Length: 105
Image (cartoon, rainbow, N blue to C red; front, top):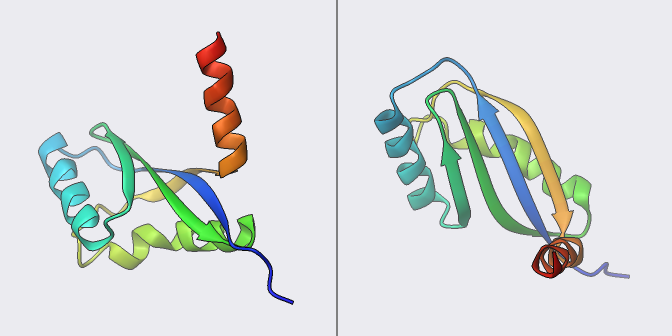
């Protein structure tokens, strides 16, 4: 019996040694060229928050892929040697409910 594939919104936060914002911006542009799925990117000189949508049967599958994303593209996209310091994964229905609650406030 096949489980249904669900949509998940992922927020991955990475941090490390401070770098020039232009270096980070270039790295994020290269990552987006390699994985054209980034919903948004917020960066400072010492951290970056990446948001994107993914599909999977369950949250654990999506979390495993998200945790590997940075390391799998570190060399090819010339990403900084930063580590994951935050991960949030929310099913699409929950994300939609959050948005609806925000619009009512």
